[in-house]
Image (cartoon, rainbow, N blue to C red; front, side, top):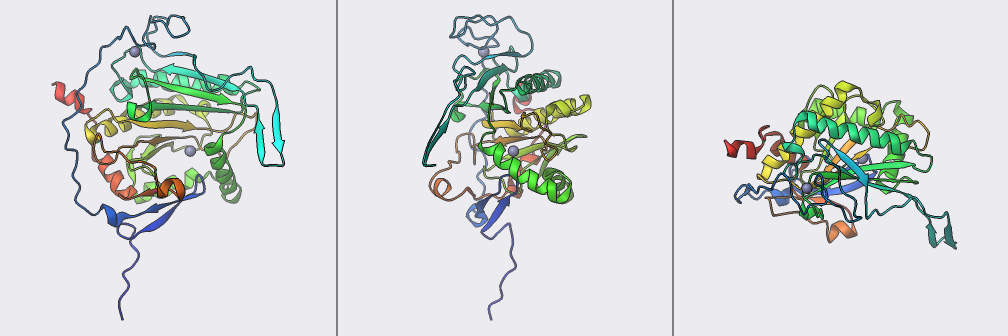
Length: 354
Ligand SMILES: [Zn+2]
Ligand SMILES: [Zn+2]
């Protein structure tokens, strides 16, 4: 009788469950057993000017609406001149037999410049400057979330032309709106069910498993941990989360905010060093809705969804099976975590400059 080998996550195709959103993904590790080519491209050492007179985000320059930016020295926040959301929308809805449904949506779009320096990105900024970004995120979440017409605040960054980011000046966005959008709404349902059953946040218990197993950890400090989640869909996807279960940024203490800045800086350095390029990604915070209720089931966290797969130019596309069925990956999250974890904490550009 043929002997059946025991199930091995590193070798056998399998499905993994994402408890945060309730969805599954397909992992096909046997397809990644071909040798790793590593990055074969020259390190990206492109330099930009510290100030670009044509950049609409640089200090002193004029934006599309004709308003000049102030000569800011830290962060700078303004209402997006081309926001997808507006707060002057009349209430209204449509419902034809439950099949054609629509309702008006209102909100605000804001842009946050992380630095006056056109030539920097988060991993190249000082810990103090990144702490300034954490502080402005916190202030914006608090202020926008306090508005009665805002039920959810989404803070995010699109980095890199491959992610559709049209301007390399370091900046992120905030879209704040009346309703809770799809992804955080799914996470609300999952986290609430877990909290009601166990009396602890889902991510508290998940983090305990990861800290014990260690195979998917990327880096940690006293208050934060970065890891490749067991259910990661993107090749080098990570989750950055605080050890203490807080529901939003305003509940972090000073030491936790400093540690968040430290973890952000180090994680993005690991990313840049992986393929010696300014690593593109979409990243963002998930926090409790701002509907005036307390949501102790919500555990603040930050997702990084980077598209790169094998080098600075070979990226993963979510197409075919992934559009029609569910997410799929070849390299395992454990393997990706090991690659990310083993990167130097000195930015590759700082090394090459000497
Ligand atoms: Zn600029
Ligand atoms: Zn999330």
